[in-house]
Amino acid sequence: MNKFLVIGGTHGNEPLGIEVCKRLEEKNIPYLDVLYANERAISQKKRFAQDDLNRVFPGTKRSSYESSRAKQIVEICKKYDFVIDFHNTNCPENDCGFVGGSDYMETAQLSLFLGLDRVIVADYDCINKFVRRCLSVEISLSSKKCDVDFWVRRMIGLKDFNQSRNYGKADLYKFSYRITREQQNMFNFPKWKAFRKVPRNDLKPLNLNQVYYPIFIDDAYTPYNYAGLIQKLL
Image 1 (tube, rainbow, N blue to C red):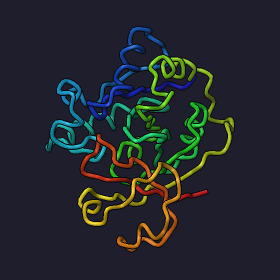
Image 2 (cartoon, helix red, strand yellow; image 1 turned 180 degrees about the vertical axis):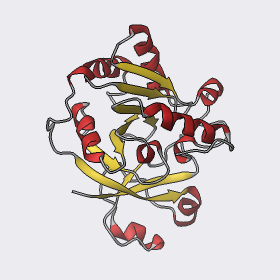
Image 3 (spheres, one colour; image 1 turned 45 degrees about the vertical axis):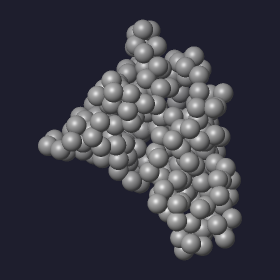
């Protein structure tokens, strides 16, 4: 049977993963361990204490608290077959999974098993790039899936996951671009809807001429960015 690590609190003010980890701890499930990634930020109820933990992987020993913690997390995760890292967003209809690394298709199958068929490949300095078979679960606060009981059941059900099976075909995207708040103030982009194609004319001020889909639009968790842009892979 696979061994799973469930991570909550990579961002200390995103509640779902923290609560899921608390519930799983009480159950003492042999194939599941939990990890509170950024305990300092959790105690402060902030996204991070010094640096955004999910932007400083693989981390270093002598730097900020988060950078040192990232290095520790990378080592801890090597003990597990799969890692599931929980996140929240204020952006509606933004439920998806993030994967990375050379074996991301196996992790995409885990995302499908958990009911998330939109999967984004990330190549920036996040946990998915540096931790093998790491799925980040991204759930909108307004989603029906933003439910602790739902995800506790899903985590318990991981005993039935078999990476050699095919659980379907994911809608695969790659992360491409961040629109900063400064750019939004300058160009006044409309408020798009997550995973709906952005009209090309909207992006002319940025000289972006390909087909893009937006995520994390006007997300209060990341006030320094207005939106992320992704492109379809398959």
